[in-house]
Amino acid sequence: MSTSTVAIEKKKRGLFAGDNLFGYLMMTPAISVLLIFFAYPIFYEVSSSLTNKSVGQDGKWIGFANYAFLLKDPTFLKACLNTVIYVSITQMGKFILGLSVALLLQQKLRGRGLIRSLVLIPYAMPGFVAYLVWKLIYNPDVGALNIFLHQIGVLDQPISFVSDRTWAMPAVLLATIWKGFPFWTIMFLAALQSVPKELYEAAAVDGANAWHRFRHISLPGIRPIILVVFLLSTVNTINSFEAVWLLTGGGPADATLILPIFAYRSLSAFQIGQAAAAALILVPPVLIFVFFILRKMKKD
Image (tube, rainbow, N blue to C red; front, side, top):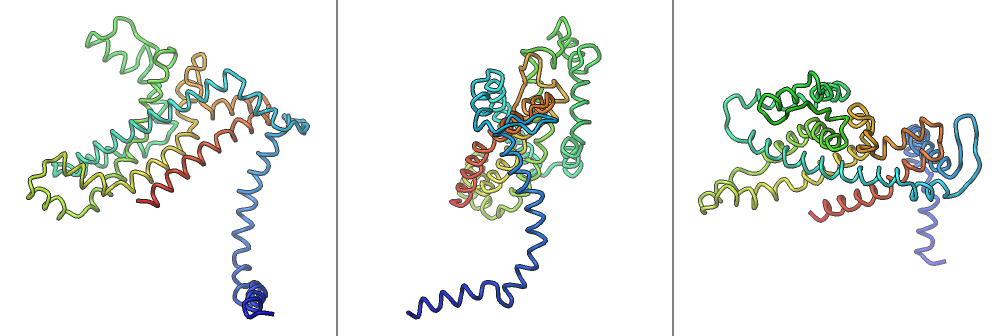
């Protein structure tokens, strides 16, 4: 027997010996919690998606029939398209608004501390309160938006923004961006303040204007934070439920129907298998997105 073989066998025998065994024992509670609250729900959802299970019935194994049905369902496909639109526009809006406000708050302004506190209000406000306030703002009879637009002569007749097929999605997008941009602002502001001031001073001496300083110093300096915030916010928005549900319920005529609402409707109709399949269809694109962002972060 070679020396290398002996070494490998000793290593194998030592996996559960001494300190290693103690370490595994210490990890047992955490592993048990993960298995109970993470692995089992995933296993249950995957197995349910492969059956025609409903409330009160165990259901039968039907393989990928639920997935095949969903991919042919016009309502589901519309929910997918709405989800892509919803996530893409809200993330872009949060990025532009969050970065703009962060750059503004980085300047030496009077009352800067107060402004920072005020900016945090939308993010600190409970979601259901924030979106119900926006629903009141959109109200055609007493809503502030209709009153303002009427007074400046833009509207002759009030618009029920959340009940109109044309305006429902823009109304949801605006409220979602307003609720989420402070998180981006605070993260960007913290990142901007970590960029060495000497770089800005040296660039100013070399004659670089504000745009060049932002492009070649600020933006590269906060790039890792941009990727992290973009990752966290996008995954959170993909799974977002309360904004659309409280403002429009997915209507009118499915104009704002997104995948979490679609899955909820299926579950409300006691179609557990179909609801599980609808929820799991989100997983592959999300994992691909996460992999791409993490790979980009590793390169940076």
